[in-house]
Amino acid sequence: MTNSVLLNNVTHKDLRVKTGYSAEFGDSINSCLVFPTEFAYVQREYPIVFRRDAQGDLQPIALLGFDENENLFLDEKGWNGRYVPAIQQRGPFMIGLQKGDIADERREAMVNVDLDHPRISQTEGEPVFLPHGGNSPYLEHMSRVLQLIYKGAGVIRPMIAEFEEAGLIESVDVNVELRRGPTFRLPGLLAVSQEKLSGLDGPALERLNSTGFLQLAVLAMASIGNISWLIELKNRKRAAA
Image (cartoon, rainbow, N blue to C red; front, side):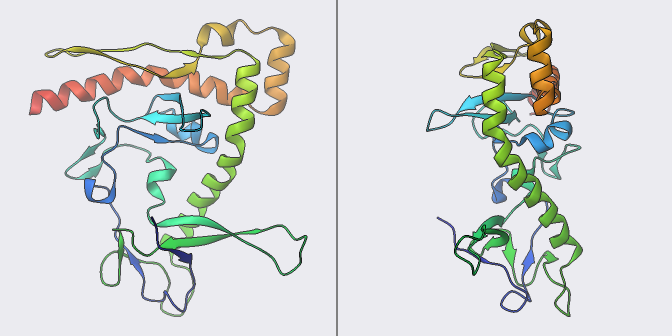
């Protein structure tokens, strides 16, 4: 449950947000949802795979670790990665849809805040508003992150539909072989197949390109190489233990 309310610079004029990343803030996770609007950033660091949610719908996720609650990019100093996925960046903020005054008017996307989130403070962290009521640089950044999430959420379903129509999604075997330790397998994951993407004919490629999803397929496919980096991080973690 969340205590989500519409953010405003009167009621929340003294609101602050603790930044940084730690288990306390819910960052000890082995995967997280990612959005097509951030694939270009995510694929430089994390493997982008797909997993079915509780409703059976495919969702793109970034792998962060192998064991339960294991984020191999999280250490005592914070998140040790060049890019933090947007869903983790957003902290206590989320998009809320507000109805307009006119019956047929589209709902407007507004910034909401969860006042019960562990990052919320009145004394510590980054101010949300400036002393005279304007948005702080931190809130401006969060607004951009939320826009990325909001726009990306609307792209997931049509992107998946096009990938499946083109036959690009297949099960992937992730076998983790550690230098000193057991070998184990991650079940239930799917990925964009390099073989199937390379084998698409002209019309299929043209369709994917015209919808804007060809580049996303290439990014997701290329990101699978980051699994080897995850394994290296796991080996380093075990060696330091």
